[in-house]
Length: 183
Image (tube, rainbow, N blue to C red; front, top):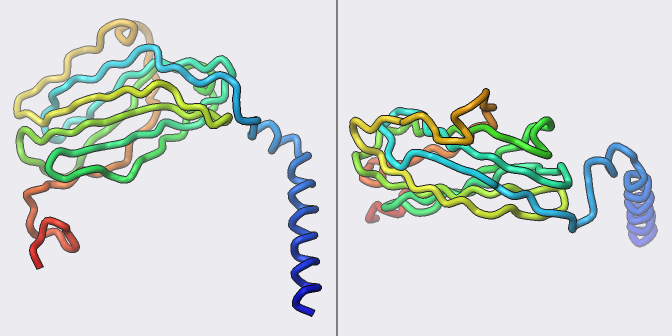
């Protein structure tokens, strides 16, 4: 009896997957692996930021296939380590071409001279990755963000999304479950 139920269950899954596979909305969303990878053509971000300011990471990217799906943001903080990656979904109107900025900020008060490195790349529906952009950042008192250089200084820029990683103070000994604490 258990074997019969298992066979029926597998049959239903196969039939369902075949039905979904012919769905026009699903086939529009999914593409075969391959195609052309996205390319980040220009980027800019200040290297020093005052604590509490919003860091704008300016990006211009293109994808010949028009199927960019999300940004991958990898954050490394000196004295703390790597954070889990964050994924920022690319809005439908930006899947072929975009020019704008990603926002990044920390709600945690960090010591002056805290250093962070953010690596960003874009994935598309065909599992292709763009080139990687590695951006250093140091929190420095009195740092001012200058206006961005070309091509980001002309015309309106779109807010492409927010990197949702909250940095941690490596000197904070009150954190629970911290690998910094001696037990």
